[in-house]
Length: 170
Image (spheres, rainbow, N blue to C red):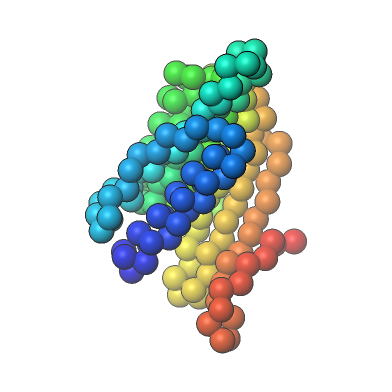
């Protein structure tokens, strides 16, 4: 349901905003207005370090992108690479929905073979929804200096009682 998805997105955004603030960053967020699910398609949250007592080399910035339309998965990865090209010294997290593990391999290959000089880490989190089995698969891939270094797959499902459960796939 679109309204449920909207509520989840608002909670996710609040979580990332609060996390950034607790870690001492100032947080810039594209505002999602109340009861306007059309704003779900592309969410950006940026953490900036405003501690002017630190040397500029030690300043870490992180930008989070969230794409909900699995039709835009390729466009999301291409947009991420464009953002990296504009600012290679920022860390990025891209959360996006996609259709299959084969598609994930394809999208990861685009990042792995990119000719961009990538200085910071990139975390790509893919979500595959299995609507028939009421299960979501989360695949996370860490790219260090533009090359994939770690991956983890999680499964989110509902048990017989209807409680949501999550576990890592072994």
